[in-house]
Amino acid sequence: MVTDAEYEDMKKREKEYLESGGNICPFCNSEDITAGPVEFNSIQGFRDCECKTCKEAWQEHYSLSGISEYDKQGNLK
Image 1 (tube, rainbow, N blue to C red):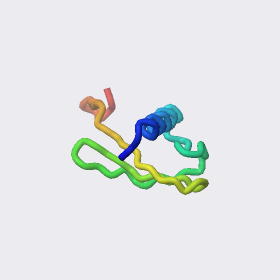
Image 2: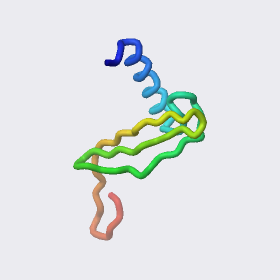
Image 3: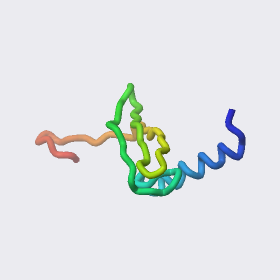
């Protein structure tokens, strides 16, 4: 079970990670991270990430947030 302090720490790391655009490790702030391919199930996606510096691992989550329409010529409107 996660304690309140651990949960708050996780949320802080998550916020900083999202603010960085996912370009730094949420544990040590290194930019030396790798990410696998985005995998989808229904309307959600995810990918596994790892920091090459501290060896921590995490999973990014993606969700459907909207659509873009094409015109008759195949160009985005």
